[in-house]
Image (cartoon, rainbow, N blue to C red; front, side, top):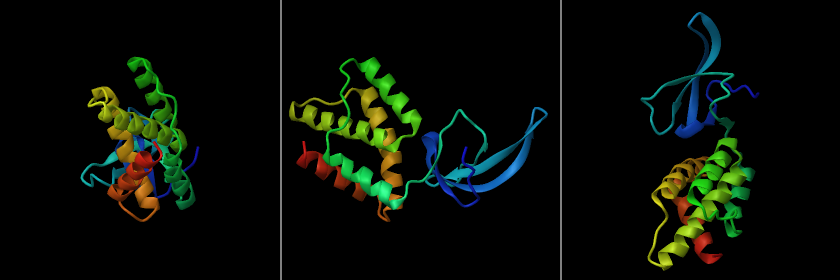
Length: 168
């Protein structure tokens, strides 16, 4: 397991980009462990303490510029398979998100955005549960891409939308 350092920006679970403010020992229920103390970049008032060896949450090193460029370009290609059965689709997509594999997560965003465009043409829209998954993973992914590419999430969203419409 990779150890992070004070000042590192990481992707932390559902909170997305977060800065590690401190690494310290804390004792809970007579057990002393090493903890990361961090805060989400978009919520500086929230402080999170999580054990360094926490296996239940996803903590990932931020993507570098090259990885981000590659992922951004992947939106020119088709995404992953659309699973027709909604419960199966939600379960499979959530499992993929929990792996933290940005390439696979980008494929899901890609697929869901393409499906959304397709449905709009038929004057329909994604199921609420699909839209919720899409919104949450898109927010985290686009912010991470934006930070590593020195831009903002809105610009990333516009680039992705142009690619999806163009290569649909």
